[in-house]
Structures are given as C-alpha cells and as structure tokens.
Length: 156
Length: 169
Image (tube, rainbow over the protein chains, first blue to last red):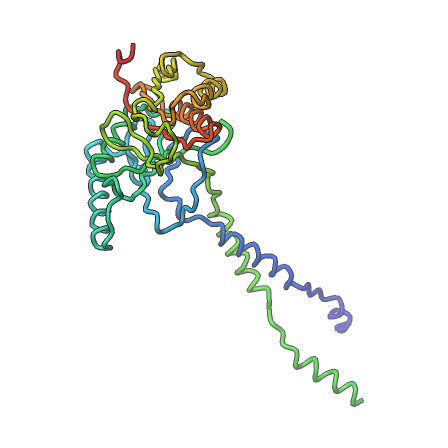
C-alpha cells in the first residue's frame, strides 16, 4: 500500500515557471521608474501633438530644473504650493548653485551669457499666462535662458 | 544484480534542489515590482530660448545664409496677439493686422499663407499674450505655429510677451 502511495505523488517541474517569473521580474526592474518624483500629479498638462519627446531624460550632461506650476500659478515644491517670495528664493538658490557648479567645473555660461540649465516648465493647463510669465521673468532675472514647455504628446 | 546496484547509486547522487522557496521569493519580488510599477506619462516639450526684456526674442539657432536674414529682426517677425475672453479661453487671434480663425486646423492653414509665401520674409513670431489667457489655450496656438513652421520647412522660432490691454487696437 505504501509503495502505491509514493507512485501517485505529484512533483511538478517548477523550473520553467521560475524562468518565466524571473523574466517578468527582469522586465519590471528595467521599466520601473523611480525618477518621476519631479513630476507632480496635480499638474494637468495641456495636449499638443507636435510636442517633441525628450531625447534622453536620463542624460546626465543636460542639466534640467523642473518647475511644477499649479492652476493658481503657484510653484509646487514636493507637492506643496510655495508663496511667490519663497518661489523666487528657490529660483535664486538654484541659480547660485548652478553658477557655483559651473565655476568649480571650469565651465562657462552660454554665448548669450545664460546658464546652461534647461528650465522644464510643467504648467497646469488652467493656469493664467500672467503667472507663467512672472515665473519666466524670475528665471530670466536669475540667468536662465533655456526653457522647455511641457505638454502631453498626442492628438490635441 | 550488479545492474540494479548501479541504478540505486545514480539515484542517490542526483541532487534534489528545492525550487519552491526560490519561486516564493521570486513571486514576492514580482508582486513588489507589479505594485510599484507606474507607466511613465508620454510627455513632450517645446524647447525655446527666451531672452529677457527686449522687443523681439528668438531661438538661438545657427544663422542661415538666406537673404531674409539680412532684414532687421522686426521685419522678419510675424506679430501675433492673443486675446482672452471669459474664463481665460481664446477669444481672438490677430496675425499681423488680420483676425484669424480660432480653430487649430484653420489657424494652421492661415499661418501657412504667411510662412510659405516666398515673398514674405517671416521666419519667426512674437506672440503677445493676454495675461488672463489659460496656458492650455496658449499651448494650442504654440502647437499650431510649430506645425506651420515645420510645414514651411523653417525652424520654429517662437517667443512671447505679455499683451498690455489697449495695445495694438
């Protein structure tokens, strides 16, 4: 009787299943995006079909500063809306940091005297132009010249 | 008898690796990655070089040898005014001196007339924007201009400034 019991013992081959699971893990490890912290979900971007995708968002040679601006025109920092004077302080601090980094690295500003950092503007579609313009002017006053206006790619 | 003994010894030598714990761990890892996975939004961008406080700003492109480049910047700039209506929606677009349609495709067709005409020197535009205009509406116009520049095989040179009410009326 004991011998007949061992004959019916099921031992499924788990190795192929493990292979598939490891492949799935590899896939998710490669596509996982931990660097999306700069992208505030509260900002609803407009849609523009001719907005070009970023060449290489992970390119370390291109310095980017992402500014999220909510529908009331306030700068969002870690999800918190900043009053205007604090937003200006943040921009100045960032500009000082870029200038210091350039000095340490022996780099020079661009031909027009602007800083090489690209200001990535993620502005809510319901924000007024006035708020956006005041932010742009504040950036320009601190030496930033390059701007990237974000929009969702797709049919508008 | 000898043959039977050989079979037994082979069986004893084969290692028995338990795969189930490894599978458990793999499933836990898989669950973690599935739960933390967030599809990256498909975002595009419009790159612009905006210089501070001057009549006309332009993208810092390499200068070309086209004859229109000899003209002063003001003559090569297509002036555009965007006025906002109630709720910050686009109420009027004026290109040059003329009012143009608000609908995106119709606007693009109208812009093609300015940018594809070889007798006109326009290779950039300065958009004066009503301070109350919503960013989404502005982006719609920027998108139309960008498409029109691409159709005219010209590098998109866009810049904007705040429209002062009463200006250009």
